[in-house]
Amino acid sequence: MHRNTGIKDIPPHFYWGSLELDYSTAIAANVALQNCTVMPRRWYVDARFRCADCGNEFLWSAKEQQVWFETYKFFVDSLKTRCDECCLRRSEVLHLRQEYDALIGEARSQGSVEQKERILEILEKLESSCGPLPDKMCETRELFCKQLMKLNGASEH
Ligand SMILES: [Zn+2]
Image 1 (spheres, rainbow, N blue to C red):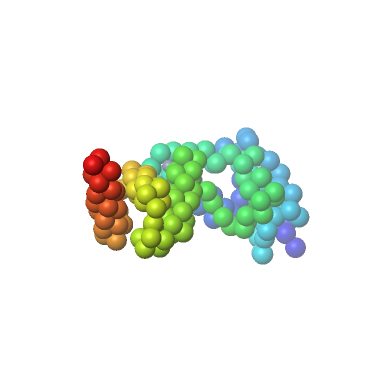
Image 2: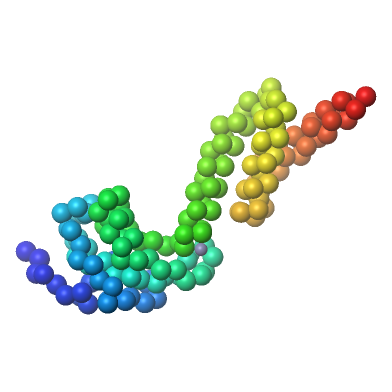
């Protein structure tokens, strides 16, 4: 059976890639609440990482880990790899992509002006968070811009 190991014996894969661990912040884990197959986390400690997206340092706090693993039941080997801002940006991007996918079919075939304007808005936001858009999206943008310009032109007469 597992020995009750000390804080400094935390297996390295639990904080793989971390820049710094602060053992003074250690919280003892409630192993029974973890989603774990073989080796549970016995301790949570404040850890600093470099964000995989923006490269800034961020803190993954012992308290946050306790919530991740004991309340949200994230798999015990999971690691936080992105800062909060980048996580938020990624989830916004994901939602925009889902909205785009849900709208695009109808918007292309018999779309209303509102739908096309919304698609253009989504594309603008995606471009500002993710950089250059894929060709297919650029084509859509050009097409909708032309169609909307035509409509605006026509309504002036
Ligand atoms: Zn980041």
